[in-house]
Length: 148
Image (tube, rainbow, N blue to C red):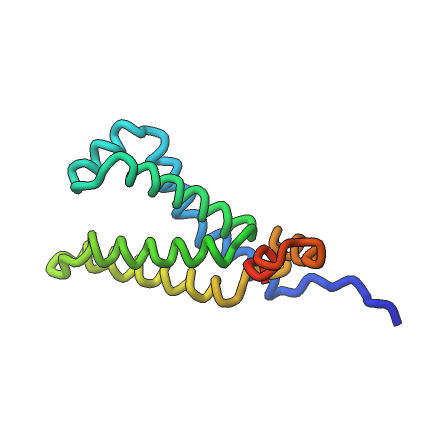
């Protein structure tokens, strides 16, 4: 019997929905920061952070957000955003006397947890990674390893 085409399962759709929901906050925030770069650089300066750091944050949020949303190098994007969330929580949201800061701290930890789960599970079957994995035999070994 020939290999039948794989059928779309509900879990595939749920994983896609999860990726899109997780990436939304980063794509939105990255575009908001990029839309008024002068204000962004000023805000970062008030936090003691340089313009290159502001640009790197924008690039990370948009780039890794797109990786997660499209499922292209999804594991790498998810790990990068997980560590970004941990750093944000630990550097900027530790005033636990403020309920708002505590809430932001907890949300950052929750998003990081979701990203770590996504990095372990991979992008799923509805992803660019999956399409590329089908051609893994024609890829450099390190690229195939990142996609698996």
